[in-house]
Length: 89
Image 1: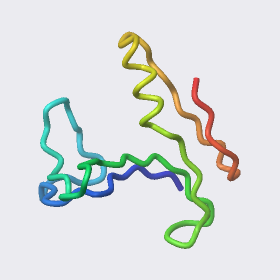
Image 2: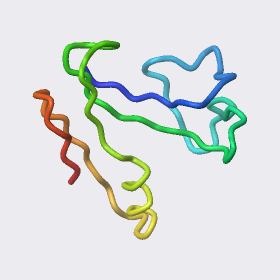
Image 3: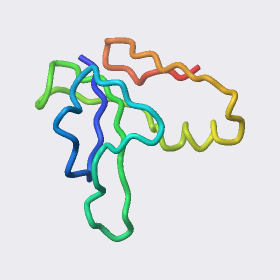
């Protein structure tokens, strides 16, 4: 099972659901007041199913920072479905 989710966010739109199309500028919610304010985006594979399964994922923050240097880049994340870390190409 793979999943993507945000943490530290509230007030998400009621119509935002699995399969929703999200575009630049769409409101996804409000970041919870924390110091410093931040948001996590997790992209993970869950071996054995959630919530008790083994989670393995990719650091999207670092990947996005790298891609910001050259916005023409396209990256692909591949989950191997065996519990090993995903590959990024």
